[in-house]
Length: 320
Image (cartoon, rainbow, N blue to C red; front, side, top):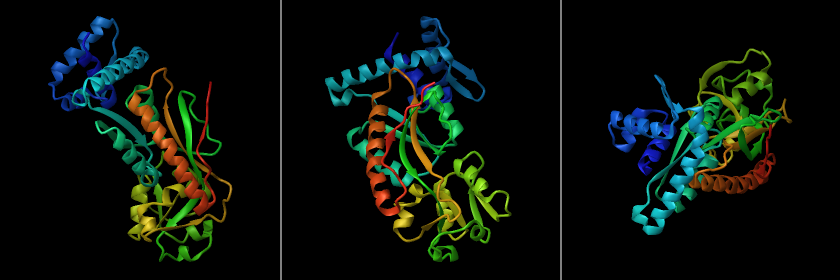
């Protein structure tokens, strides 16, 4: 067994494809495939499930993944002790539903990179279901997901609540809705609406709020960031968690503003950081997790002062 075989398995798991892993590792795909098969023969298990859509860890591979991570982390520490130039470049993959990306994620990865110069942070914007699949199969190390208060959280993941806020209407300052202290559902019916696509928590929340009333759904989009840009360009209004708007560069520049929803002062949106339950977690992912928690605590305190609706981050545990 060779160290590079374990590194190749980790790359295929992270990227979900032999082709993409071969490109990143600068190998031919047949050479990578043969190396992985040699390791599988040596271990006596099929580590990967090979499909047309890509390669994912098999059930046996997922059981062995923590041990592979332990070996690679130990090798990395050994190379680090021998000299910085011998360290291998690592990658941490974060799946995010996009809300709070700018106010929270950007400062977090900037701080993390200051102390992990050889670790690349890959941020992937996907829906919650894809994040959960990636965490389960080893393609993501961490996942940022939104929940409405009272939603069930999958027991397979370790969840840390980062931020808690309320839905708000996000508009341009020159919008008629910005002149109101709070925006009612009737007010929303007069404005072109930018909705999140089906599969996002805020899509579900908005349809529940409107309760079948004939809103003007002009646009739908993936994620909060595009929604905010569309609002800034004057295309309409959208509904987002307050922690996704407060502190955003567009809000700080005065291009966006937000108003509470008059018809709903009880619903809370939770931003949680999730990772797969495992005996071993890659060191880089563990460190990034800690930075997220610290940054969320700082951001939560700022939001409490400005918006009065977000609590300090707190640990949540979900067991079967």
